Length: 108
Image (cartoon, rainbow, N blue to C red; front, side, top):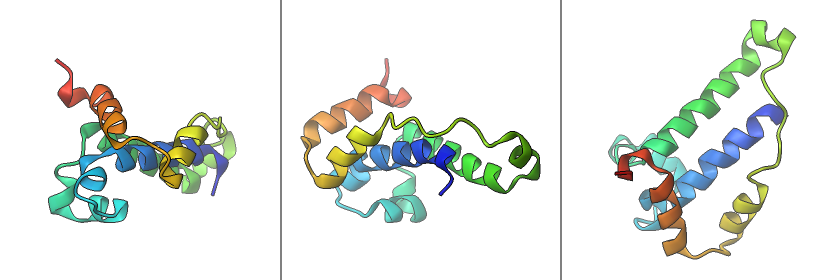
């Protein structure tokens, strides 16, 4: 995978792992994205990050961006969070609070 999309991919993975679809209902992240009934309940933040990731992937095949480059290289900013969530080393309640704090629909 092109290095410039790794951060976006990890953002989407972290957001999906924190979402109620995965955390509470115990669905697979792929099902939460592909199933229309499940994807309807995804937080807006996850949908926005998925859109950003897909736009990055489209930029890989865009000839205009191939010459200039698709974007900045991976910074590794989300590596620690991703490793914690992937290994199961997290508190589900704390992760749900983080997602609600970041999600724009829950802000007052």
